[in-house]
Image (cartoon, rainbow, N blue to C red; front, side):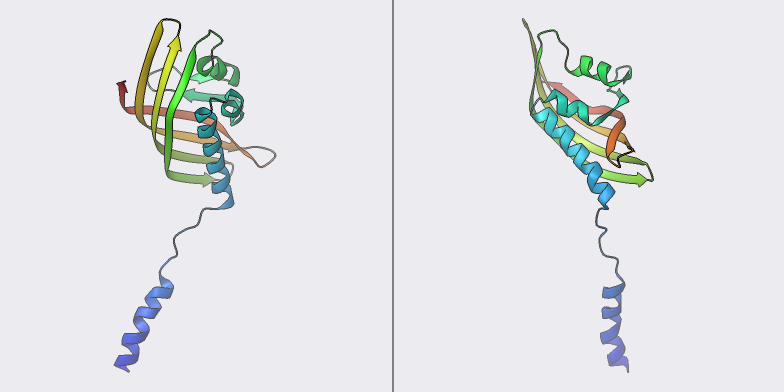
Length: 158
């Protein structure tokens, strides 16, 4: 009997051990929004970047006042002033995702390497940061960014 218990007990633990959680379909949809956002920036595709936001979205960039509404986001990120922003590298690692009915929250770490050129003004920056994004489920069951905030852990001039 002891031998049978010694053999059966490890098998019981094996079958009772929880399987690593697989992402839900909603979690996968939210991750697709994140991926579309990152790809939009990597390709400097203004339309793709802005498409992941609700019309009344608000962003809170590190040490700046919040910016609300897609038109204001467009003017902040893609001003019509002849300037050029070049994304050399943009990597995001999602460290947590929470889905709560019609809201979702992701927290990420990021590395962003970019250059800015406007006439005689040229500079670059490498930013390591943490961001939190809140998404809302839309009437068509898609997800869009409602709020986004980030802070730089380290931002260094290039």
